[in-house]
Length: 372
Image 1 (cartoon, rainbow, N blue to C red):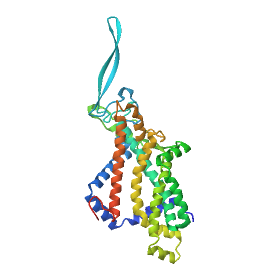
Image 2 (image 1 turned 45 degrees about the vertical axis):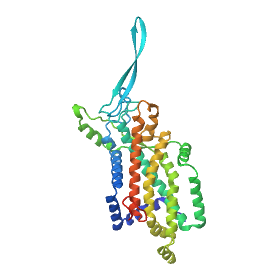
Image 3 (image 1 turned 180 degrees about the vertical axis):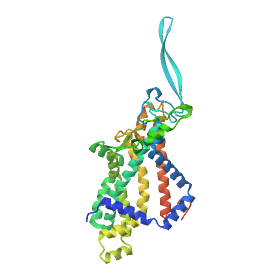
């Protein structure tokens, strides 16, 4: 019996809405009120999301704009030593001199600049768009593939379960990064150009032109009108991570199919599709939702690794900037450190939210505040 993954995904969203009962809301609020880490995670994720959504309004410079006169400027609070070579005549002889000068930070580039003079703060802000979109879209694709597979496998069991789970075992036999690199190498790098609504509609240029900086300086304009979304990477991370959703959904289906309400539905002749959609899926939402939050963080790390290795297809990515900063580690450490810090903050925030959801929705697990 065929199943439409998109139909199962829409049913999952509907089941998620119906599962948000007053009791669930109370558990979420209670766990949130007593968990400092949950509050921290929500603040971190909300901060990164705001930066990503309103990047054209927040970023101080065009992330692609180059200024070789300002290259490798250090972030605020730091300075960089630079050796300048000169020539002078001493006793009718040409002597080469080396002089050490210090390059100081400027408020125009609070996080410094890279080897081409591009503003690191702007690149970190725009890189958040790529990481969050790949994380969210890749997770949705993995859910659309894995949840239907797991529900069908667990509900029917027997040979169907054996075949589907052996396919999952084969996928698990390959390291995620190695499999992702192989798939990207097979299909090539395909980027999807997405127009920036704030810039295309003229909202961002109007707002930025109206703003003024201290000292009578104008706010820099000319932000990118579009950005590239790595389409191949989104598909690849979804294909690499679907197996985790399949295994969790299968485990829940194996448990739910033994419940009395499922047996009653089968006894009155309810179709299998109806039983899976109305009974099995709604009662499997909680662990799938918790897994989804964890997978968003894992996919962000995987996308950063692919970008670092040059398989992303976009240059506005945290992993790409880390790769560009390798050759400057001894002189300009911030080029790689700033996007690395952004990755750490984002992943920690998402994982803290996942822990909060797990502790609030699963009464058998003790959270930060103790047992439920």
